[in-house]
Amino acid sequence: MDLSLDLLRDTYNYNHWIYSLIRPYLGDTLIEVGSGQGNITRFLLCHKEVVCLEPNKEYKRRLDSLAAVHLNLRVIEAGDEALDGKWALDNHFDTVVCLNVLEHIEDDLQAMKRFRGVLGNGGRVLLYVPACPWAFGEIDRNLGHYRRYSKRGLVKMAGTAGFSVIKCHAVNFLGAFGWWWASRVKRETHIDRKKAAMVDRAVPIISAVEKIARPLIGQSILLVAEKK
Image (cartoon, rainbow, N blue to C red; front, side, top):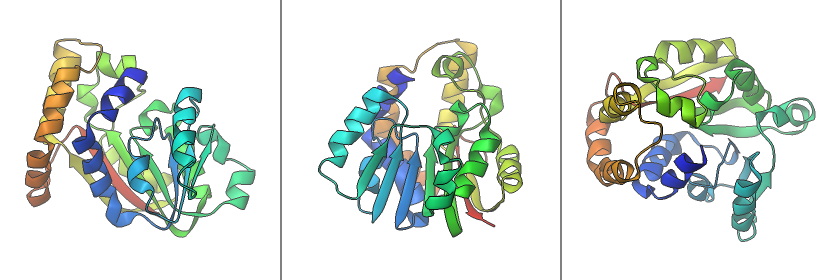
């Protein structure tokens, strides 16, 4: 997991692509669940209030450095379980942001219900998760993934948790097959740094193509859902 986040820190184009996908759906007050070392957080700082939940002490320390110069950012050393109880009563956000994190949570349905509990009326959850269960392999296991998602399964879970789905689509068509080849066929255990850099350089082209024609399958799924 740590190696993965270190690699993603250096893939600016990829991180900005994710942000560009969620940007139209962000409200004024945000809570980011599983912020890591702030790969996406840095793009969220133009919003009125940003709260980061991050259980890793080292990543929390890095986020604290960011919060020291951004007064609208608050960092809490905790995971999604912190959203139970008093949190749900005392906090109401416009948006819950959960990017490449839900697959690390064993009880993902319970996590989604927790997300719903801290949203105000009409609040939204923005999910970005790994797609294509058939691509699940050694890299996923090494990263601590419990699963990869299908669109149908993700939409069903969101509905069960009390959300109405606004948008759900695949992202990064080429990445799906690259992940399957590396993780299932070659049984690699880590993301290759050179390959990650190569993909990052190709993101402007890939994202432009997928803006014109959404792929039917992809390495990831973006889901936008509203609290019922």
